[in-house]
Image (cartoon, rainbow, N blue to C red):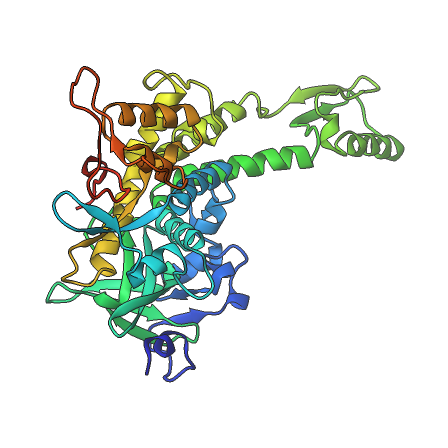
Length: 439
C-alpha cells in the first residue's frame, strides 16, 4: 500500500480505542479546525475545549487559533510573518568547492521548492500555510512523498491531527489520525516537520497558548464595544421619579428610551426627562474604564508575543522608542524575528528533504529581496558592491532579472588601487561567497 493510500485512502481498519473523532458537522462553529476538517479528541479536557470553541480565559472568552485570528493584531502579525516567508525567493544551491556556488536547478528538489510542492498548491501558498500553522500551533507538518528515493511532493497535514513522540532509539515517530478515525504511523523520514520555540526539543509550543489571556482580553473588549454600539447610547443608571407613574406614562417613557437606544448615532445625546425625573449613573462608562487605552496595551502585547514591531500592525504611537525610529524597528524585525523563521525553514529542508550524502546541496532564502521595495537602498548597495569589486555589472543585472551585456563580466578595482579592471575568469553570475550564509 502506498504512503498516499495509507493516509488518504479508504478506511481499512476500525477507529482505535481511546480516540474519538469529531467530523466537521458535529463541531461547535468556533471549534479548533472546524473549517479544516475537524479535530481529534483524546481526553475529556480536550472534548470540553472543542465544545467551548477553545480554552477558556479569565476574561470569560474561549480562545482557539481560529478565534484568535479574528483579533486584528493577531491576524496582522500572522499575515506579515507568513507573507514574508511565502514571498522571499527560496534558492537551492550547490557547493562546487570552498569558494564556488551555483544554482541547483537541475535537481528535482529545486522544482519542488520553486515550482510545485504538490498537485494543487504554488510554492508561496504552501509556505504561507505551513508558516501560519507554525505561528498558531507551534508545529507544521507535511507528508513527504518519494519516488525512487527522490522527494516528489509535500502534502501539508493538519497539526491537530498529528502527534509526535520520541522512540527509545531517539528517532521520532508520528501518528496521523485520518478523517475516519484510523491512525497511521509514520517514520521520521516521512514527515517534513517545522518546529517553533520548543521546551522538549521535539514539538514546538503555540504562541496562542501562551498569549491566550491577552487575546481573550482583546476579544472581551471587542464584544464590550460591539454591545455598546448595538444597544446605542446605553444608559448605565437609574431614573428617579418623585411620585408614581401611571400605565400611560410608563409606556411613553419606554417608547422614548427605545427610540433613544435605536442605534449608535444616538451616542452622546441627552435624555429628556419630565415630571421632575432625574438620572443617577450606576456604572462606569467605557471612557471611564479607559477602554480605548486598554485596547492599545493589548495590541502592543500581542505584537510583542509574535515579535512584530507595533508600527507594522498599525500602532504608530511611541514609534521612536527603539533605536532612531521606525526604520530601526523594521531592521530589528528582519534581524530578530524573520531571520529566526527563515533559518528554521533552511535547516529543516536540509534535515528532512536533502538526501543524506548530498552535502553539496543547501537551501537559502534570498534576504536581499527584503529591500526590493526600497530602490534607494538597493541601488546604494549595488554601487558600493560595484565600486569595491564585489560584484560585476552582469551580476547586478542578474539580481535585477536583466540579461547580461557584452563586457559586463568585469570587476573594477577598489578606490585608490592601481590594479586595472580585469574580466572574471569563469564567472558564473553568482554573488560572491561572502553573500552565502549557508553551510
